[in-house]
Structure formats: structure tokens, C-alpha cells
Image (tube, rainbow over all chains, first blue to last red; front, side, top):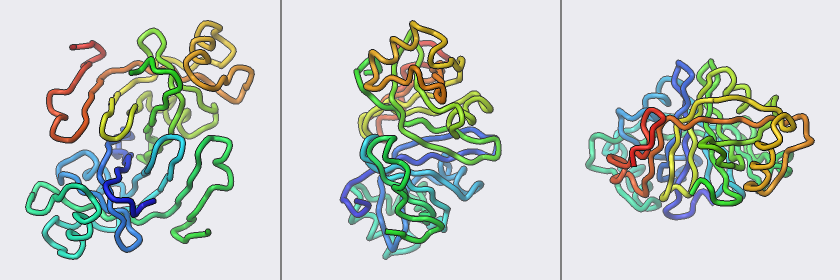
Length: 133
Length: 133
């Protein structure tokens, strides 16, 4: 699912003051990392750099993959040619050349998948960064 | 859109420690309020009671309504018959009778709608709790 072309992710982050932010972003799955691109000055980027954490949702509300992730690194959009090419290949847009943007490389820590609430128990696919399925 | 039967909302909340949470919830739109039901002990309920704020998304990632909301009140699922009936009528499940759950009644403060990022500017529909369209 995470390798599907042109998919988006809901990215929830929080400020140190405890204010939640939520935006949709285009996703690429590169080397077991979720990669998104966001303006360096955006709330999402600033929250991620400050807190190091995000909670992500991929898919519709009733067939969803939830990912708790940690910020692995931020990368200028023209800093890492292989990463930029991989992102542009999966996503339907290409942030390279726009110095306002950075890639946010996120390491999944816990992954869960479910359709409805009664399935949540037992649908953990990754725990502590290790796939358990 | 908010009165559509059986729709869900992505609800992002944050703890006082700055940890973001994100879950999908079934939504009802009652008297200009977003109403969701969540276990009283859930992270979402606890975050909302502590911070008073949530950021909500309704619709798919590329045709979305984003709502910044404040907690108006929490209501036991069997406390307010009119609210419970309105929720059950729009949602496809009925939490009434399950004392683990509470209704979270959320007052929209800012509403934005867009399809893609280049539309975000100028797509504000509500500001400071007042519709501007």
C-alpha cells in the first residue's frame, strides 16, 4: 500500500505548546521510510523538527494504515539526488528546484491497519520499528 | 458536505507534552457543531479536555474541508436525548447506552476547503467562528 503511486498521507504533528496540526501531503516510501515534502517554514516542518514525532494516516477512514513515526532527517530537496528521484517517481509532483521545500524523512515506529474500530485490537503490523507480520 | 450521512472526520489532537494523536471518527453536524463520539478514556477525549482544541479534516486528501475547532462541551451519550438522536440519525452507529463513550461537541473556529495546495490561499470559509461565504 505504501508504494502505491500518487498517494497522500495525513500528517498530524504538535507544537511544544500542545497545539495539533494536520495536513495532507504526498507520500513516497523509500528504503523503509515515509518521505514527504513540505515548506521548511511550514507548521508541519517546524513541529517535526521540534518534537521529532508525527502520527500519519494513509488511506480512507475505514481502510486505514496508521503510522507513528519519528523524524529520521530533513533533507534539502536538491541535496540527495537518489532521494529526490525516488520521491518524484512515486509522487505526482516534484519539489526539486524549489528551495522553500525540504524532504522530511520519517521512520515508522508503530504501524497499525484496520477498517473499523472493532478490528483495532490485534492489527498492529509494526512495533518498536520492527515488522511483526 | 458536513451533513452527509455516514461521514468520518480525521481528528488531530495534542497532549500537553506536545505529542500528536490522530484518529478517524464518525461525524454528525448538529446546530453548527461537529459532534463525534469517543471513549471517555481515549487519547482523543483526554487531549481535547486538556487542550480544548482539535484540528479536523473531512473528505479525501484532495477535496478536503479543514476545520480548526474548540471543545464546546462533553456530553454523556445518554445525557442529551436530542443530541444523541441527531448523532445516531446521521452516523451509521449509535453509541447511546455505552457508558464508556462521550459525545465531544466541537465548535468550528476556522474552516478551509481546497483540492490542491495551490488553492489553499483564499479558500477560507469561516474565520473566528463566523462564516465568510
